[in-house]
Image 1 (cartoon, rainbow, N blue to C red):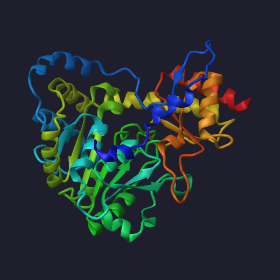
Image 2 (image 1 turned 90 degrees about the vertical axis):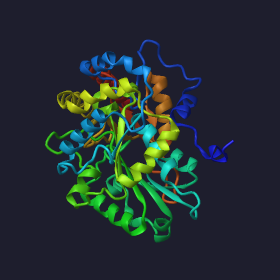
Image 3 (image 1 turned 180 degrees about the horizontal axis):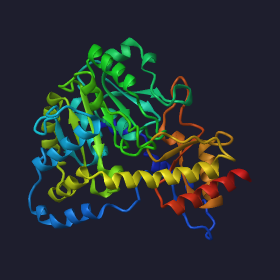
Length: 399
């Protein structure tokens, strides 16, 4: 067996299931799960129609490169969304469909990490999406955690990293808007990261799967491709972004997204994916085209989350320290007493609600564990269910 498998940590939801074992919640209260970031709004009917209308595509093997129509739709969307110059993003050289960002982010490390170099390092925010860590470990690299806390605005502090770590670094994962905090990386952060990438020769993988869920319609979060355009970095050197329809279009089961960026890197990634055998099915690709081409359903989607945050802050502010994040669909709440596991377990016992302990999304470092003492609340159920859940949390805290 691959010895690196022994380095993997249990997945957060395995730990959560263990935490809840033996606990009996009140049967009179319906269970509400706010633990997993699985969108539950209604998928767009035109996406489902497109999928049904192209089911004959299941008779053909899909290619790793994907359909030209899909790649063109992706380029059109990214060009509009991030203010790219016409023809800056080439659908033939810069874009690959992926089976959701999870699959793409994991596979990317396997393709780009050179395990023959001395003690390779892959950096990631802490707390984080655990796929980054697993991808690093199975690629033969050492995860290096950049703590994100209230003190630094939940943004990694790049200046705390030593030169030796930068020299060993081959890949940096960033996530904006962030999971679990909803923090947005500003253009200055990306510019500084690119300066370091040029100096130390590493690749930046920007996970932007929450980029279309934001609070202020006038200020969408910046993205790495847009910063490249502003810098005249037309070759997207050392930059690859990952986007998905799961959150944007409420189709997590479609498993459809894309990776885009540096043409040389993407050519190698395409080679890896040809052997990996994870090409996106043809019907899925056809269903994805109208999803990338339409913005009205995404605007409506944001409005629903905005209403949930309005309710959450109104209900929770009197009893908890709660802040409205600029983006994504999570609340990152400090818990009374500081024991996030105990809070989640006892809340389940008393109110039949499931949250996720923050420490399940983070690792202990010499500067502490930035996830400990927090819980992640996913505002993915319906508006009424979310409001009910917030009232139960407030009642539990107020006891």
